[in-house]
Length: 194
Image (cartoon, rainbow, N blue to C red; front, side, top):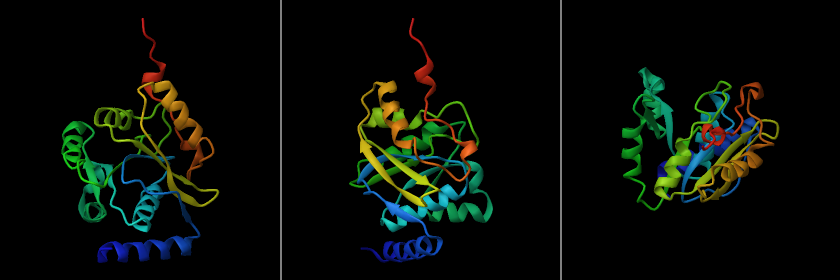
């Protein structure tokens, strides 16, 4: 194991132990990571601790406003990728150029915001379907103080069925601010065909 990963893993395990959080699940080699529930900036901290504990690098998409000043240096150092929401396609294309590598983990907060909304963003779904990279359901659960890797699976293209599976997994997961949780639902599920 490379020295930076060893240092990060040791640090992560120490912080998790001190804060009484634990990790769960098996890290995938490749995946579009859907992180939920996303209701606090602490979600990012726990995601980084999970990645470091697992000795992996996640390319975590974070909105561009977090990359100003000293915070930007920290974000880049931890593998965060600046996402301009006005033109996300260019960022995604550049990241996917690296997807051919043996290990590729792209993290997306599908809720898209820490505030309550009606729908999740469908970017994770489209990227997974277009690239064939499976989805991994990453999570945090404040009541049990657990952050972890959930199941990894290929999406079928049946949006309703795929989202039912995702909803079932997240049904018992609670974020830092439960009142801000957005139910796992894509706008595409509510569209009717003529």
